[in-house]
Amino acid sequence: MKVKTIAELALGLARGDFTSTELTQYYLNRIKQFNNQTQAFITITEDQALAAAKQADTCIQNKQAGKLTGIPIAHKDIFCTLGIKTTCASKMLDNFIAPYNATVVEKLNEAGTVMLGKTNMDEFAMGSSNENSFYGAASNPWDLQRVPGGSSGGSAVAVAADLAPGVTGTDTGGSIRQPAAFCGVTGLKPTYGRVSRWGMVAFASSLDQAGPMARTAEDTALLLNAMAGFDEKDSTSANQTVPDFSANLDNKLQGMKIGIPKQYFAEGLDSNIEQTVQDAITELGKLGCTFHDIELPRTKLAIPTYYVIASAECSSNLSRFDGVRYGYRCENPADLEDLYKRSRGDAFGSEVKRRIMLGTYVLSEGYYDAYYLKAQKARRLIKQDFVDAFESVDLILSPTTPTTAFKKGEKSEDPITMYMNDIYTIGTNLAGLPGISIPAGFVGGLPVGLQLTAPYFEESRLLNIGYQFQQVTDWHQHTPDAFK
Amino acid sequence: MAFDHTDVKKIAHLARLAITEKDLENYSSSISNILDLVDQLQEVNTDQISPMAHPLDATQRLRKDIVSEKNERDSLQLNAPAIENGLYLVPKVID
Image: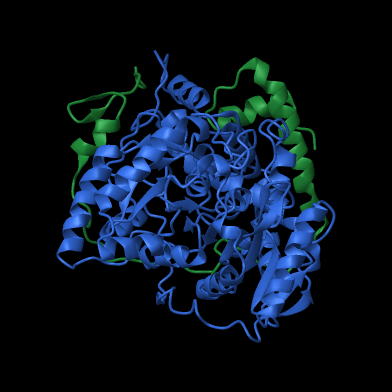
C-alpha cells in the first residue's frame, strides 16, 4: 500500500475499501518488520489493537463512525495507558503498569482510534536526541546512523517510517517540533493548557504540553480536534472554547503578516537550512503572506532560563519516585535513606540525575533568589518579547532547528552542545505559545523543518498556513526509500 | 561557577541520589558548565519584573471539597515493590 494520510485512510474506511482490522494488521506488520532497525516502539500492543479495530469496524458498519474511528495511532510512552506498561523510557518505570488512562488517551480512544503501541523517547522526556532512552536510542529513518531528535523521537520515527499514520507527543522545550523537523513530519505544540496534562508523566509542569504529530497539517488538525479541551483533572488546563481545528484549513493566506526574528537567523544556523527557509518564505509570499523584520531581543536568555526552570520543576516532580509506592526498588536496602538513594541512583539515567541535581541546587537555600527567582523574572521578559511582536504580526516564522539531524554520539558527551539544539523552540514553551514544525525541504538528504509560532490559542492559524503550504509543496509526502 | 565534588555530594544527598565516586567528576564539570551558561542571566536587569510561574498567569482553580475519587488501593498497589495487608513496606524507621 502506498503511504496514506489519516484523511485518506478515513475515506478508505468509510468507503469500505478496507476494514480497520486490515489496516491495523498492516501497520502491526510494518512495526514488526521495521522496529529492530528503528527502535521506534518500546511496547507493541497487538492484542489490544486488534480488539479495538474490531470494535471500530462494528461502529463503521453501524454508521456510527467519527472521523478517527478505526485509525491506528501510537502514543508516546509518557502517557498512562490502562493495563499497559508505561515506562517513560526509564528503568525506574520499566515494570510500571498504568492503573488508568491519561485524558489524551481516553479522548483518542473515545474518538475511535486504535492504539498500536507506545513509542520510544528520551528518559522522562529529557533530551533532544532519543539517546537518553533506557531501551536504546531510536534511529532516524532518513539515516539510521543519525538521531531522530527528541524527546518524542520514537513518535516522529513512527510517522516518518510509516509505522503509524499519526502519533501523540509532548513538548517541554521543543520535544514535538524538533523531532518532527529531524524526521520530516508535521508536529504541533498547542498553547500551554490547551491539551490536558492529566496522566502524562510530569517533567516540567509549567512547560509540558501534549500535541499531535502526523504527515500533514490536515491530519494534525484531526488529531488535535480529539485531544484538545478543558479538563477538570488538570489544574492548569485552560478553560477555553475549542474550535474545529479543521475549519480554517482552506482559508487563503492573502494579507497574513509574518514576522521574521533576526535573532533566529544568527550565528549557529546552518546556511543550507537558512536557504531552505528562504525558499519557504518565497513560496509563502506567492500565497499572499507579507514578511516583516521583528526583534526577539531576549532570545539568548531562553536556554539559561529554561534549564533553571525545567530542572527545578523536574527535581520537584521526580521526587515522587521513591522506590516505595511504585517503580524500581533497589535490592536489600539497609535503611530508608539507602532505599531512596540507591533506588533513584540505580534507576535514573545520567541526564535525569544531572537535571535533578541542577534543579535541587537552584532551589536550595541561598541560591533560590539568584537562580530560580531570577529565571522566573527572565521568563516574563522572554514572554513579553513575543507579546510585543504579536502586536504587529500574525505569526512568527523561523527554522525549527539550527542543523539537520546529527549523528548518534556526536553531542551526547556535552550537555550544553545538546541543549543548544533547542535554541529556536524553547522560547515558545517559556511563553506558553503554540508552535508547529512542517517539512520544508532537504539538506544532504535530511529533512528540514519550518517553524511557525502563533499568539495564544491560535493553533488554527498554524494549521491553516501549514495546510496551504502543503497544497503547493510536496516535502511532507517524501518517505525514506528503505521504508517505502 | 565551580561546582566541585563536595557540591555534587551535598546536592546528591539533598536529592536522595546515590552517585558513584567515578561519576563525581562528570557531574561536577558538566554542572559547572551549565551554571556558567546560566550566569548569563545575572547580566539582565529584572528590577520591577514580577516572577512568572504560569504562561497565562492563571490562578489556582478551586473545586468543591467533596470526595471525587473512589478508593482504588488494591489496583494501585499492584505496582508497589512490597506490600502487606494493604500497607507499603519499607525498612524499619523507628527502633
